[in-house]
Image 1: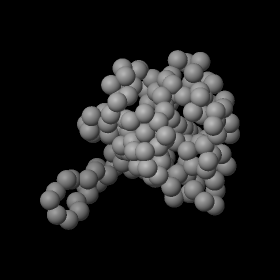
Image 2: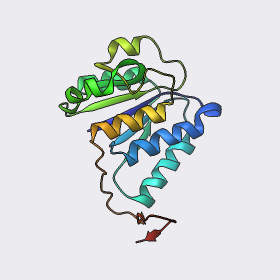
Image 3: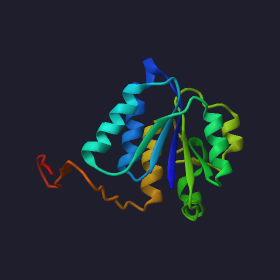
Amino acid sequence: MISILRLGHRLKRDERLSTHVGLVARALGADEIIYSGERDEGILESIRKTTKNWGGSFKVRYEESWKAVIKKYKKKRFKIVHATMYGEPVKKVMPKIRKEKDILVLVGSSKVPGQIYMISDYNVAVTSQPHSEVAALAVFLHEYFKGKEKGFKKAKLKIIPQKKGKKVIEN
């Protein structure tokens, strides 16, 4: 199981970016996303609607305390992976991470508390340059799944890949 924890969502500042974190998590194979920080029903509903229309069993929820989430997942023996620009290179640590059955991936928004770096089993950098948490999560999940796409059951909408133009069919 791969769960994503979005740390410190801020209503006025992070709405679009936090939505994109959820969309990327779902599209690239995670099983769920948990938002912490300020509660935002709009994001939760947006991700639920996407899952309903585009298929899959992706879950989304809000938890006020990121500390409680991490504690709960550690108790369930999840490995904690922090996506950051200050960690070890993704290519170096990914073979170890792929061996883990259950993973909680942490992605920040506002300044990430220093203790996150200490409690994480892996601090993983997709690059050692400033970048977006959406990009970090996308690269991490793409590497983890070796680029394989997940199939989405019960989709109302489906994209038909083609060289030019857009083709979406309704089921």
